[in-house]
Amino acid sequence: MKRLYIALCLILSLLLAPGCGQPTTVAQQQSVTQPAANPTASNLTSAQVVRVVDGDTLAVNIAGTEQRVRLILVDTPESVHPDKTKNTEYGKLASAFTASQLKEGQTIYLQKDVSETDKYGRLLRYAWLEQPTNVDDEAEIRSKMYNAKLLLEGYAQIATYPPDVKYADLFTKFQREARENNKGLWGVQEAAPEQPASTSTVQQPSTKAPETAKPAPAPEKKQSVTVYITRTGAKYHTYGCQYLRQSCIAIELDKG
Image (cartoon, helix red, strand yellow):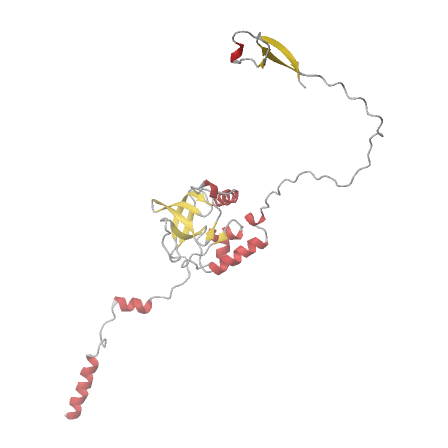
């Protein structure tokens, strides 16, 4: 009997142990069966291009709401800055390139890094021209992601603002490639300043005829000035002098 009692106690203790014999909850099932995060494109958001603001900023339509998107990890020269002194011809070239690649109504796919928006309320995103199957595949990034295309074609420079630096190493490589190959803005040559016509320092032999006796100078033409005197004739006066009210006699004097 004592052994039977001990055996029953052991069975009861096992049955009453925490979790023993309890059904698995939904949460427990999910935690067990949840697959590891994978680099597929399932977390991308589709959007339609409304317009190009400048080289690295877009206006897009997401589910009926217009929002601005600032492309992450790239920076193009200014072209629409409120302070017009900061806008450059390079900025216009970069804007024109983006406008040639992204057309109104075109569907793009936006990928978030870490931050949601910048201090201006713009969405911080990578923009894919085509939906990728693997967002970590370099070949797909090169061919389908517009942020990467800006660097590869030489119309932007890399700009890192942690924590949004997922592709920083890869983008650094893309920028180096563009620079070494003089792509885009890296290949634009500034016009050299116009140089004044050079003057030769080599003296040419004189072709002047030998000097002869100099001709006599032309007689100098004398110049005269008109002044006025009064009837007393004591002093000369210029026209308008108050002493000419009573009498005004004009005479000419030679300029000496």
